[in-house]
Amino acid sequence: MESDEIDEAGLERLIPLFYERVRADAEIGPIFNDAVADWPGHLERLVAFWSSVMLTSGRYKGSPMAAHLKHRSRITPAMFDRWLTIWTATTDELMSARAAAALQNKAARIAESLGLALFFRLEDPVAARGGIN
Image (cartoon, rainbow, N blue to C red):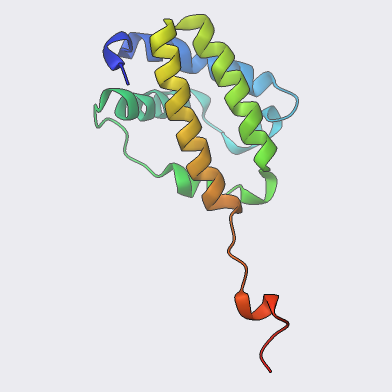
């Protein structure tokens, strides 16, 4: 990852524009709009999150997993794909090619981790065999 092309100012431009697009999206916008009451504060936390992830700034204090688990009943795997599509388009538009690629790779790994936590369930081997005899 080349974070030398990613800086706080770039993240402060990227994150608000990205979430403006997310909020306007017919598929995922309603969930975000319902889940977030304080958008200015949320955007500050998201900039801090990406600063911590990409610049190792340590600015973010929180649990993205806990935040997403609260809304598990409304989230589908396809919504992660939509989020990543908007992220890719926005990062491609605003960032250098190297910075966009680094941000996109990190976002894909984060989405995969969140998706596994929300949706992956090991089958119960006893139940799969028809129960205990």
